[in-house]
Amino acid sequence: MAVLALDTSAAVAVALVDPGGARLAARSADERRRHAESLAPLVDAVLADAGLDRTDLTAVAVGTGPAPFTGLRVGLVTARTLALALGIDVLGVPSVDAVAVQAVADLGLTPGDEVLVATDARRKEVYWAHYRVVAHEGPHGVPVVETLAGPGVDKAADVAARLADAPADGGRLVVVGEGAILYPEHLPADEDAPLVPDAAVLARLALARRAAGEELPTEPLYLRRPDVQEPAPARLVPATGSPA
Image (cartoon, rainbow, N blue to C red):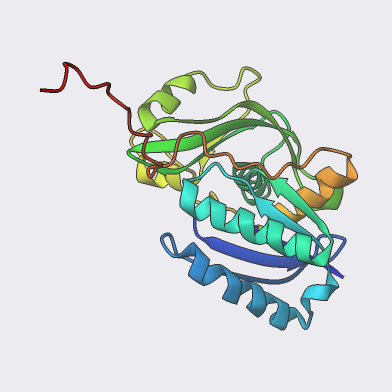
């Protein structure tokens, strides 16, 4: 019995965890333009690595972003389709939440510290979310964080301006995620900070939140309209004048 986790908000990440959250297998591909081609083979690979079949899955966890439209949609559609076919639950978790809790574990943060997650939104912008650490370790071994602001999408300089003041209680403020690597002049990242979601962490977070009775919607966090849109219907302009 296992939970499959997928995230396509940045690269493609896939993991299997047991009901207690222990990692059984994980694979990833640093693919930013061909998520659809990469995801299915990775799912098959992690199942093979763990010696499991799709019928052994009890739930599918999926990252809901925020992220650009095309890549994020691949993960969400795959997760929903697989869960529907198997008759199991699909559990949505914001991808930025997974990065935040991973940062707490990786950087040894303690209650009162704060985390800013910044990911690549293209167009010289970042997706961001700001958190405060509640507990270094909670259910399923997952750190507990509360959202202070976001998620949103802005220029890196505008996000930095929001963080001009240090945490009021004197705790640490760390910046993590690929957005910080792209714009270090505005968002200096800790050198040990996680950059992209870990699918196993996302699975543990989904399990912890489900156990706490939280809603886990799978609605995507696009935050802005896709680049490609359907054209507006043509307007009918009434003819003027009279026939000759």
